[in-house]
Image (cartoon, rainbow, N blue to C red; front, side, top):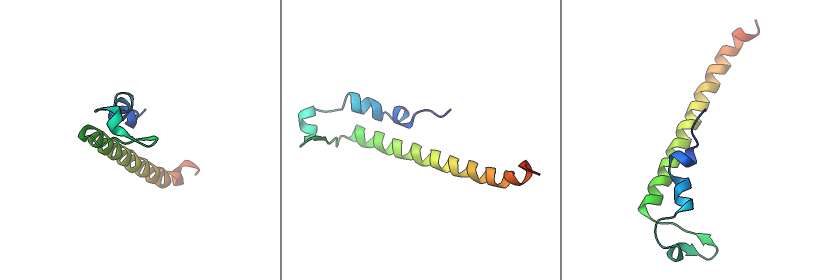
Length: 72
């Protein structure tokens, strides 16, 4: 099983304990976090998700190529 990208990237930690003063992060009803730590975690999450998507695609291609021999 794959690890949860949200946990691995640190995003869940950022959501539980956002860096900076929460008052500075509020924009109406939304929480806007512009800290470098949050940006780094968000970029890491994006990369992990891209890597998982690429792996999924590669495995699907392997399955399509393999299917010829599965039902013969």
